[in-house]
Image (cartoon, rainbow, N blue to C red; front, side):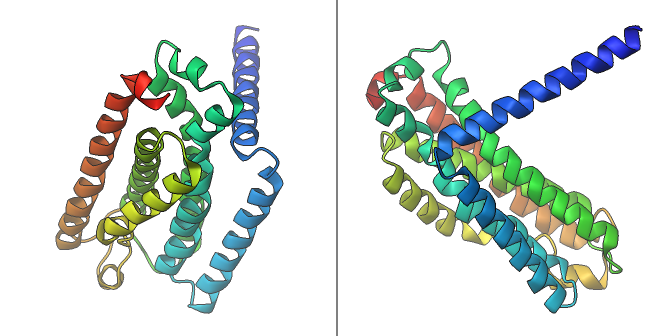
Length: 238
């Protein structure tokens, strides 16, 4: 009985999380939720076709099925996080919460987490069905890092530009382009195909990947710290 009650509570909690995530997405996208879902499905279909046309190459799937949805769909959705509150006239209320940073992070985390989990699941399925090994663990870690970096970059520009969505999208994409050497670096380059494990690449390639991952993590912490600093003085956003 105790186990059944605990299981029922977990299902109820999961249902609440799904409902909150759906509501947060609907709020950010307003009436464009179905359009965004259709665009995401189209991008994933195109990524699968490209990967199959290229012989099932995992790096093609990573570029078109992970990076493209994050940048093309995630950036404009997350850019609305402050603009939405300003349009609704509730920005002062949001900034008056005990932790404005937590409030906006919670809003940002829904699209960022959904696209990150989608990309991770896509690469995990490719890994399970791939006859040629590619390093799954480093691939999944990099997906998490680029998702977190994109979210903090968008948050930084959203609080810096006071929520002007168009300007936030442009500056966020420009920032990603400037960091493109690390942001768009594939964890599955050609050299991994010659000598690679199922979870980790060979030691020389692992060191190169770790250096790239360190830059992504450092940039995430930097943009996040500056965002929290600005949110600590909410009067600057009004």
